[in-house]
Every structure is written in C-alpha cells, then in structure tokens.
Length: 274
Image (cartoon, rainbow, N blue to C red):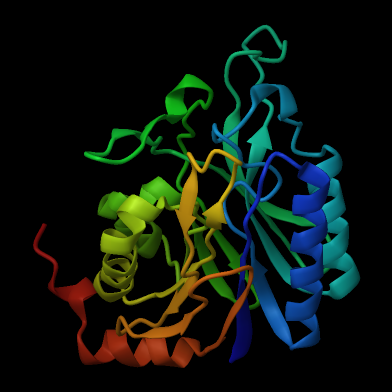
C-alpha cells in the first residue's frame, strides 16, 4: 500500500510560473508521504492552443531534466503528465510543423523509466462549445506503454485517449494495475463525461485510475477553460479522491490487494468471449 497524489494545475503560456507551481505542489505531495505523484497534461505550457511547436524540447531538454532531477531529489515516482516533445523527421532534422504530446515517468532515482506519446488526438467541434484541431501541431504516437515499477505496473495514456476503451483493455492485458490519465479536459465535456469515463475505465479493467487534470481559464480571453476534478478511482469504480476546483492535490491510498480482490470476485478477464 502507498499514497498517490494527483497534482491539479492551471497552466498558461508562462512556462516558468507553471513549473514553479508544479514543483511547489510536487514537494507538498512528497512531504505528505506520496510515493507516486502525477501532474496533468500540458504541465509546462497551456494557452489558446495545446502546444506551440516552437516551445517543444527534446526529451532530455531543460523542462524534463528539471522535473526528473526533482523526482530524484524527493525519491518519488513522478509522472510528468505531458510536455511538447520535439519530433525528428526521417532525415534527422527537427519537425517545425508538428511535435509529440509526450508523458514521461521518472523513478525515485531520477531516472527516466518510460515515455508515452499520445495516440488519439483531440480534433473536435463540440456543439455550443469549443473547436480544437490538435493534429494541426501534434503527431500521434503508436506504442502502448506499460511500465513495471516497485509500486505496480503503470499503464500510460493522455486525456483524449480516455474515450477509446480498447487502449485501456490493451494496457490491462499487458498487466497494468494502475491506469494513468493526465488530462486537460475541457469544461464543456468534463462536466458531463469526465467522472463517467474514468469510472468506466476503472470498472471494466479492474484497475486503479489516477487522473490529474488542468483546471480553470488558461488565457485572458477565457477561450480555453478546463474542468479540473483530478480524480483517483479504485478498481470497483469508487472515486476515492476528487480535487474539485482550484490548484492543489488529490491524494489516496493505493492498495493493489484491493484490485486483486475485485478481479477474483468478478473474473471478467476469464469470461471474455471476444
């Protein structure tokens, strides 16, 4: 059993402010005893667009180097929900049109354990709501990523992936105990879908779900507003932590014996016919 923390942020185009706030909350979570700490999608930058390709860095760039060193200093597993990662073209040059939306997991020694590039991109026109074309500046990833740690097997995903249950079934089939869903869910969709989708992914895969989210307005015009409500959900689908509004933390104990008990009681993995 261990304590997990979801960090809820309200990021803007001010990268230094975003990172300073994230670091302050990560340090607070570590002081409270959290062994696994997760930040939201777009931890370093969030504005009118999801990412500026010009701000993208290589995976060993300054932003991730700083956060990896913080994980090592605090001795925690740290999920950096996502950052803009530079994309290389076949000729080795940097892609100036698109980057990756990449989630990175660091171990308690500060070492990079895994990275995951968001597969499903947010290209939507919500009725009476926002329109987004994430694929204009983001290239999709391809790999399903489960990483084994001393805390359990962590299945990685990012935000809009949540609407594609086949990804989470693949993560569970690969042994995931805990599903990570760092997000920047819009207010429009979040208020109706966020809790329902996260609870569904937990129930159908009988896994814990950690979903750190962005919250609030991210630009002066109010064109981009996130729902918040960073959640931790247990394998029975019970919400065991909900940050609600504001920057801060959602904390809960993770007991993998709870997951084992749920799987034994209702062994859906043995009953599947398709």
